[in-house]
Image (cartoon, rainbow, N blue to C red):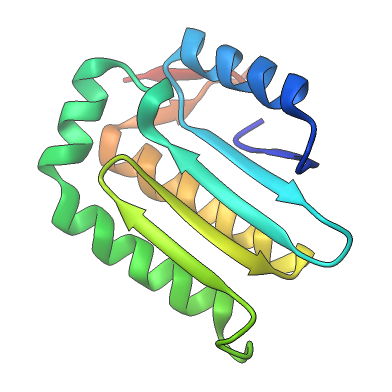
Length: 129
């Protein structure tokens, strides 16, 4: 699974998913639900040191990709209802409707995986080519 939808206060599930991502060296993208909105989080800490370094080196390209993602998933939304933070170590987009959060998570996973040449394996795990 390229990302995990979870209740925002389910820390046990969050830790377990992070540990799984960390063991596989794949992006950890969490979609934390409330009753009305979702926060999408990507933290590069689950990536290998080499992939973290590569993402840092490609920060400009990554930030442009993040800007496109944010523009697409927030199109038509009231700007007072959502927010975002991004940097080489991660991305947070909060206040998204549930359907837009899934799109944001998929787009973030695609952006990170493309930049790092990480491709999903047939069994659903992630491997580096």
